[in-house]
Length: 369
Image (cartoon, rainbow, N blue to C red; front, side, top):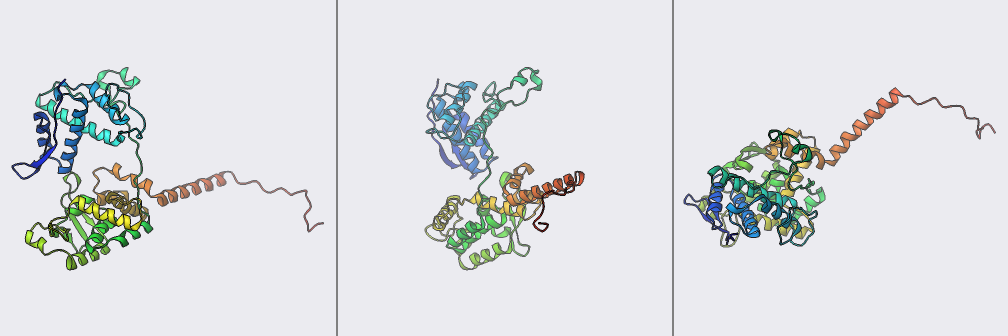
């Protein structure tokens, strides 16, 4: 068994791209491969996932087996130090345990590493199972076997959204025109945090009330219509607050740091999170993240009758399946659909089976007494 002394470091490639390294040749080669095709945050997450995995199992990449992977799942879900049992614990409340979604993401990073090493001829097989075979699949020929039972089952929970009063309270707690414009981009246009921060001056089409997303998720581009309220707030920011240093720096980003030594530089993701955290505390809210603002926008659009395909285009979802969750978030829409269907069923039932005519009661009425 070969223990690795991994140290996650960040730097720049010769081409100026953000680079992540762990100090192990095979792992660094894979992270360099990811750097050329993924976003910096995705590369950083993969580097952290690999560091966690190889630190826990204490083996070199060529020594890893399927039993090590299964034991890693146990240790992550149970919060245990030992990784010898392939049994997956149920529940996220164990000390040191991580969520099922986090385990699935880490397994994806490990699988990607070994798929890369397998393609290069460094390892004979990928030790990460795609799933555990079911009894039915064990009785079938190998060629017909599917992925089987997932190694980790993660519940599909509905995302949290803000009600109108919470959204108004959050907006009222924002202190600058810049902050109100950024929140409006997510709350009225459904933009992701990274899409807001990457907006450039040339991406703003005020006359058409649209913004151009040049670097969306997965590298996809799209045109996004946004309410005129956003452009009114944006105009106040550009006229009254945007630092003149931003023009001298020449980066072209819309949203910039307003004060301090980095005045005029592009605002970072941590800076936007800090703005939102402060506003949430001042408004007395328990929840209000950037992604919850996006979910709130797309849910309201669905409740207002916007077609699911249009919401998919607005959100920039590659698959319509990602958009279907807003069918469940829109409680009023679902209740309306059910109510109309139930009324139709009741009407048909009464038409096929009319109620019997009332029989004459033998009990005397008050008038006849």
